[in-house]
Figure 1 (cartoon, rainbow, N blue to C red):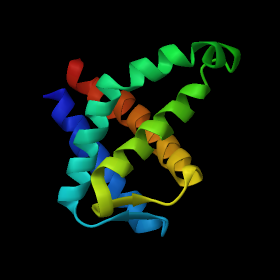
Figure 2: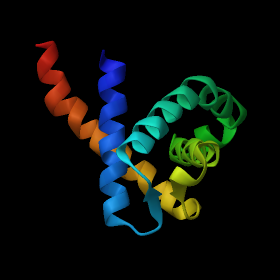
Figure 3: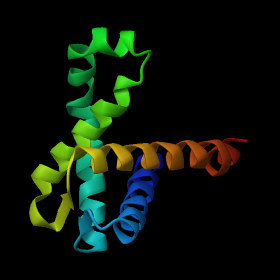
Length: 117
């Protein structure tokens, strides 16, 4: 259930980012849900492989390179989704990753943490 809530939260974040930045395009809320679902699948399957392959760089940067890995998985999602989900450039993917990470951290520490208590 928590996984599905995370997918919906990421879809809402995608919609918010698409409304604020012109270099981020979504065709519909369904496309946002599809992109969020695909991103979660890529995070399960591809992200661990990328982390292992880039482990030396990740250690040298004290884990900050993981943000770049997240941006790469977001660009993979964009390439698999086609024209319904488009990100113009790596910089926008990096900014989207930062925003998504911050929002997810805030939500996990406030709303979702209260559900466990």
